[in-house]
Every structure is written in C-alpha cells, then in structure tokens.
Image 1: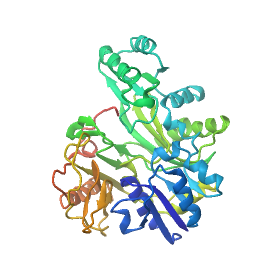
Image 2 (image 1 turned 60 degrees about the horizontal axis):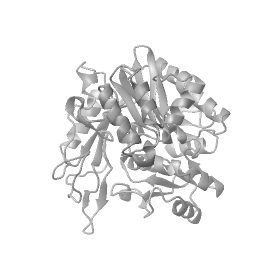
Image 3 (image 1 turned 90 degrees about the horizontal axis):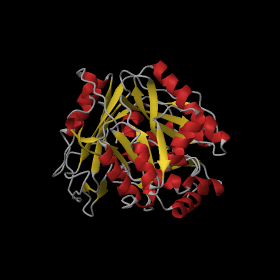
Amino acid sequence: MNVLVVGSGGREHALAWAIRRSPGVDELHVAPGNAGTASIARNVDIGADDVEALTAFARGHAIDLTVVGPEAPLNAGLVDRMRAEGLVCYGPTAAAARLEGSKAFAKEFMQRHGIPTAAFAVFDDVSGARAFARTLEPPLVIKADGLAAGKGVIIAASHAEADDAIDAMLVEKRFGDSGGRVVVEEFLRGEEVSVHAVCTADRALILPSSQDHKRAFDNDEGPNTGGMGAIAPVPWLTAADLEHVRERVIMPVLHGMRAEGAPFTGTLYAGLMWTPGGPKVLEFNTRFGDPETEALMPLLAGDVAAMFMGAATGRLPDAVPIRAGAAATVVVASGGYPGAYPTGRPIEGLVAESEDGEMVFHAGTRLAPDGRVVTAGGRVLAVTGWGADLRGALERAYRLVARVGFDGAFSRSDIGRRHIDGSRTQNRKG
C-alpha cells in the first residue's frame, strides 16, 4: 500500500511508525510531518487543515489509504472530500466528527441515546447559564461548545468563578466562535481513563485502555496541558470493565450515529470518569489521543495499516493482536509550556528505536538548515518505553528521558507513579 498520514505531532509520528512496520506498506508519506517522521517517511509540505491540497496530493500520488491524525481536518470535511474523489480515508465524516467538534451536540446525543454522562444544560445566553450553574454544587464545569485546542474547559471552584467563565466565553468571546454556546455541567469525581476503539458503522475493536496526565507538574499540579505523559493499559481496569464500556458507551454511539444518518467510521476515543457508580463520559474525541497514541501503538502487535484499511472500507478484522505487557510515555516539553516558550533549541541525545523497547516520538520538532533537529513546539518529544509490566516500561522511558534534552527542557517525574506505589489519586481532566 501507498499510505498518507495527516498531521505533524507525536501522535502522527507514532501512527506512521506503527504503519511503517506493517508488511503491506510500500510507500509512506506524512503531511506536513516533523523531524521524526522524516526518518521513516517522506514529509509533504501541506498543512493538516488544507483539505483541497491534501485531496489533490492523495489523488495525484495514488494514495491507497489516508489516516487522519488531528481533529481540525476531520471537522473541516477532509474525509468527505476524499471519499467524494473515490479515495479511502480512515476517519469520520464531518457530520460524525461533531461528537468532538460540538460539546453541546455530544452531550445532547448522549442524552438521546442513554449513554451515561454528567448532568448538564446548554446555553447561548449569560442569564440562563448563570441560573443553571446555581442549581449545581461547586465545583462545576463550564465548556465552550466548539474546538478550542484543549483549552475550552474551565473547572469553577465557586459560583462566582462559574460566572467569570461564562462571561469569558459568551461575553468576552475568549474562545471566538467556539464559545458561542456553553455547556454547564456537574463535576464528576473518580479516576479518569481513556478507551479508544477502531470502528466501522456497526462494529468496534477495543484497544488497550490508557490514562493521560494533563497537569504540567508533578502531583497533578500546575496548569492543564495537552498531556504530559500516558500509560497503557490502566492496571486496575479489567477485561470486564472494557466490555462494559463497549456495551454501554461505544456500541450505543455507533448505533445512535447510524440511526441519526451519520454513521461513524474511524477512531472513537471515550474520555471517561470512573465514578463509584461506574464509568461516565466526560467527552468524546473522534481521533486518537495525544500522548495516549504514543503509548498505545507499541502494544499493537498486528498489521496496523490493514486494520485502518479494513475499518475505512467496512471490513474491520475480528481482532487486533495485543502485545502483552505495558507501555509508558513521558513528554519532554519546552520551558514555559503551556504558556509562551522559545523554539529553535537544538535537541541532543536523540536515538533511533532500540531493541530494549524504547522510542522517541517527535512532537514539536523540525530539521534546521544545518541538519540538526531543533524544537518547534511546546510538547517537543514523547519518550516511550514498553516492557513486561508498567514498572519496567517506566524505567525504560525515564532512562531514555535522561539521555535526551535541550536548553529549558522539562518533564514530569511521576508519570504512572500512582499505580506503582499505591498512591493512586482521583483527578478530573480540565
């Protein structure tokens, strides 16, 4: 196969790495890619949200399969456009991608189809939102309806903070059009987990569970980020738990979307809060998570390209082989992230994949004119280790973290620790 991966982050490097290992792949392209993907594929200078240029490239270069990484091109209709040209593209249509693109749509969809989630209401007026917020006990959650690069959710510790958050979205337009409507919902307590499923319109392959670490600093302190590390699978989540998620969350989504005229094909990522009463959906994403993907891909032992092709063409395989053991990813970020940060810093100590179960996935990197790899983003590297158990995976990941770096680099030192030392905490994604 001739394959195109769309995107430029650590998720896309991990997807490309997994696809490159598939025996049926002859050529691999990544648009636009990064310094890491350049070593395993041909980078193409086309932005991930340039629907027309990507479609023209796929048509002109006889691409057999396109795999879309980020959410923006999905919501912009890249899959629709490619399918209209007779091209095979893995991912949901724009109508199905509304599960991520509109939090209001997702919440109301869950309500219609009996999928467990937090109590909520949707508003486009300040007075109504404030009045409903006062019916909930703090803390409570205020969400901008549309895509906001992971920044459109505010946890309000008081009703006054909720008022400020509502004003920021509806009055100050801090999130632009994405904040034209807001979701006000109850705060769920428990432990957050992620479950990814590779789907056709009526079938799903459930991948190993995973858990993101969103806060910038150790002990879940500091501002929310795009993710500072991940583990897979979550040690306490059982096969029966995953089957429960399949039956109560994943399959009702597929049945509901098909019934509503927008069949879902692609990756359905359920962000769940595991409450004392069982799992409730915090949010849906309609693509692979980042950095969860960097921990998930090393655990997939089968032909990943064939799995994506089968899902995109309605011939999903019955199972995907899963490698025994665990994987862990530690993000190495630029100083200042998630706020302002410098770029162009040379990165030292980069190594190719080793036989010891270690890999550095590039996230925010680029090749400088002199051939050096330099920083080009806030989350720069996703350093991943895998092995027989989580402890071994973490040891490998952190051993590799100690070998790579750049001026101002920082990372969390406690990814997965709660599952090793018994101090498992309960937190809530922002």
